[in-house]
Image 1 (cartoon, rainbow, N blue to C red):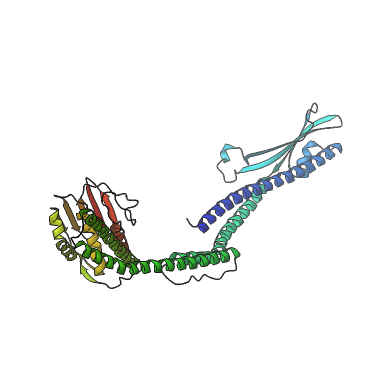
Image 2 (cartoon, rainbow, N blue to C red):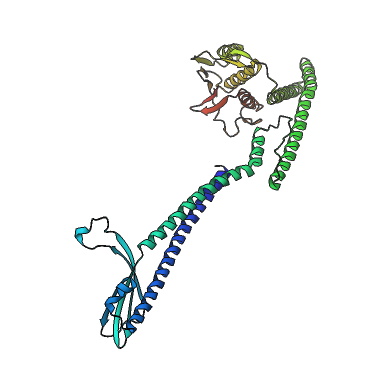
Amino acid sequence: MKLLTKTNIYSSITTILLFTAGIFIIYEIILSKLDKEADRRLLVIKTKIINGLNEGISPNEFMSNIGQKIYVRKIKQQTLFTNQFIEYTGREFEDDAVSDDEENRRLTQRELLFQTTVKNQAYEVTVCMSLTESKKIGKYIAGVVLIFLVLSFFILFFLNRYISDFLWSPFNDTLSKIKTWSIKKQDKLVFKDTDTEEFHLLNDTLRDLTNQIQSDYQNLKEFTENVSHEAQTPLSIISTKLELLLQDNNYNEKQYKQLQQIYHATQRMHKLNEGLILLTRIENKQFVETEEININQAINEKIEILEDFIEAKQITIHKEFKKQMIKELNQNLLSILLNNLFINAIKYNYDEGGRITVVVDEDFISIENTSPSEKIDRQFIYDRFNKNSISGSLGLGLSLIKRITDFFNWHISYSYKDHTHKFKIYL
């Protein structure tokens, strides 16, 4: 999940929670203010009633004079000395005959109950005031506030998203440049100008870092190429001289054996140097020439070339060509790829009576071989110089296979079952 998306989600959740709490608090404050205002008005009416009783006004006359629902009745003695405020919801009409009428609405009322003694006569007074209209006003105000907060939320959400995209655009530009940057290219990174100090510092750091990496890579590449090419000539000379020495018979058995060991070590170094040069050329993408190649035919030709080695170990070749596959490829690289695959399949097969199965299907090629050796560790299978203690190989064959398949944008997989190694290449 992107950082901006995650930030917007957290901000939105926080805003929603705050808005919800804010609406609840505002609504409660409005209701509280309405109740206090109703209580104040009830207390004003109470004062008028007490003054009226002192002036001798009949209890039955208060409702018509003050205009509220007022009930005044005489009691023997005063037992209540505080004001009691009661709020309840009831129907405007309690008669069942009109219970379904539209006017039979639920009404909210606030009631003040108090007792007072006037001229040695105790009275109990109930004053009722309707809060229905006040509650409607409160709900209306709360609804308006809710609509305003919801609109504010959406406006802030999209505004915040727009501002975030604008502010983080230099960072996104930097990411896109880094994604397409390649150490093998000599192009310098050019980032978008920004007045944000953190992004400016990031761009400067990345620019210096990539320049240093490119410089180190180029120096290492030149060193490897120079060493590999310069080593070819002396290695060839040493091999030639050793071959001449081995043709001479003026050595005892120990000396002859030592010369053979030196010759084999020299040949091994010569092959290693050629492999490293080939890997360097592949990584530098020097094999650019391509042509249409029939892969089925190329496989048949490679099997014919290696026929002597196959017959020497009495290996049975089983071919399943389910489709004629023609691709635009570099012929040299395909030849190296097939050569390494078949050499491995022959070399690590049984000394006699082994089997190699080649399958060509619509979108893949697979080569599997029986073998006495164990499963190869997938974690290091394509690493250079990951040599098997039994094979004594250079450790470059599988690395070359992987580099060539990557060069062709193919995918290679490895599996092992019942002493059978299988390499499958998806084209």
